[in-house]
Length: 264
Ligand SMILES: C[S@@+](CC[C@H](N)C(=O)[O-])C[C@H]1O[C@@H](n2cnc3c(N)ncnc32)[C@H](O)[C@@H]1O
Image 1 (spheres, helix red, strand yellow):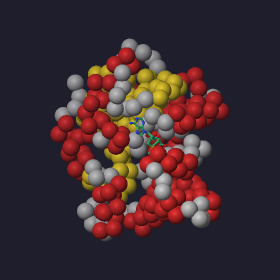
Image 2 (image 1 turned 60 degrees about the horizontal axis):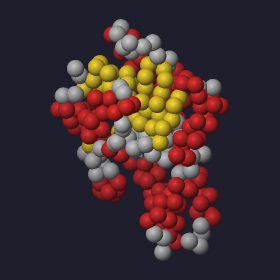
Image 3 (image 1 turned 60 degrees about the vertical axis):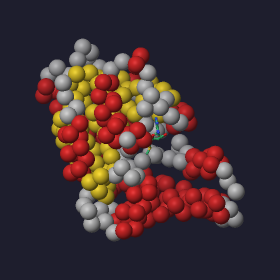
Image 4 (image 1 turned 45 degrees about the vertical axis):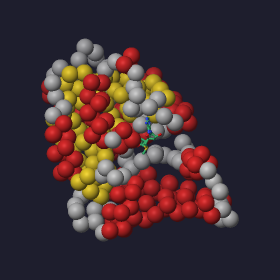
């Protein structure tokens, strides 16, 4: 019988850092969100404040799919934080290959316990990761990490409607109990009174397949390798079930990018 640690080790073998990315997203969506925040900042004229290079904090950066895009397309320095060292090692390797390593610093840490010595940032970025500290709780507590008038770009899994079939509702109630509809997320952000919502947009289905396609291929390889190991197969099945659910019910839920401006 696998103990909890062995299950986690097996899980992390599947989610090895060599996967292209570790959650739904794609370069075009990162670029769309980045262009929107840069345009907003440029229109305001006083952002970034006191520095020519934008200071960006990328939380739950994983192996850096979005970090590399930020460094490539903005004149910025990025502090990329994740709590899993192998992802950060891979990020560093990719940054070298892409010629942007000078712009990126990586740090092993818990996004919910950032030291005050880190200072403040012009822009906080988090793709598919802020849920780890509770999406709204994260927005709320990280506000003081932004300069006044700083910007926050974060994606979150949301319901598009209230009509999802039971199997879909039940699956996400177990996996992400805090999941909300897009409208109720927007209302809740407004209720925080800490941010103005500049824009939000839904990630296209291609962003899911940029993540799921390589993952599904890997699940197939592990299934062959572990054909005599029922506990490993159960973990593979549960990951495959998520992909199958998306294939069947993608019109009911998806990732939404929220672009926010810190209120004074
Ligand atoms: C779904 S992945 C998204 C990774 C990346 N942003 C992407 O889109 O490919 C979530 C990431 O958050 C990291 N993570 C989870 N909990 C964390 C925490 N408390 N502090 C820092 N990183 C965390 C995981 O290691 C993982 O890399």
